[in-house]
Length: 191
Image (tube, rainbow, N blue to C red; front, side):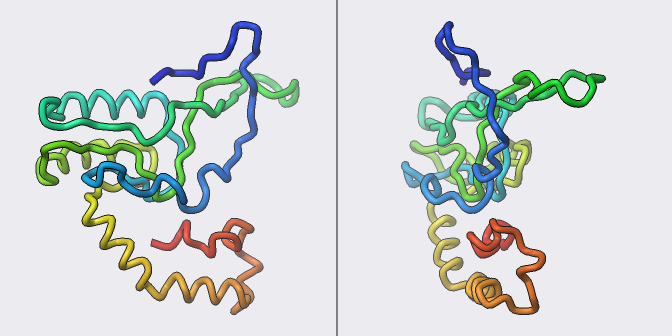
C-alpha cells in the first residue's frame, strides 16, 4: 500500500475536515467474510495509518504459509489527509500542512481475511498478535463465530431496551446523548 494517494502533477493534494462520521456507528457494508473462513474484525472505530498496514503485511507475510493460505485486504489504502501545524507556531495563519494520510474504520468492519487450506487453530495465534497491535480494539473471528454472534445480537434484548429508552426519552436521557446516539441508538458503545 502506498503511504499517500497519487494525484496528477497539476493538482495540489486537497485538505479535508476530520469527518468523524466515517468512524462512528456500525459498519453496514463490509461486515461479512467474502471467503467464509477467518479474519480480523474491528470492535470500535478508529484510523489506520500506513505503519499499521506495513505491520499487518510484514507480520502476516512472515507467519502465513503461502503455499496453502492467502490473505486479502478489506480496507482501502490511506486516503484521508490529516493536517498538522509545526511545533511552536502561533494560532491562526490558516489550515496546517498535510502530515499523513489515514483510513477511517467503523465498528464491525472486516479488516483482513485469511483463507485457503488452513484451520482456525493455526491462524489464530498470529492474527491475535496483529489484532492487539492495531490502534483500536479488534478481534479474531471465524465464520462460525460471526454467525453465532449475529444470532446472539438478534436475540439480545439490551439493544431493544436502549432503543426504547432513547426514543421515549426515559429519565431525560436526551440531555446527555449525542446526535450519533439518536441515530444509531447507542450501538457504537453497547457490547
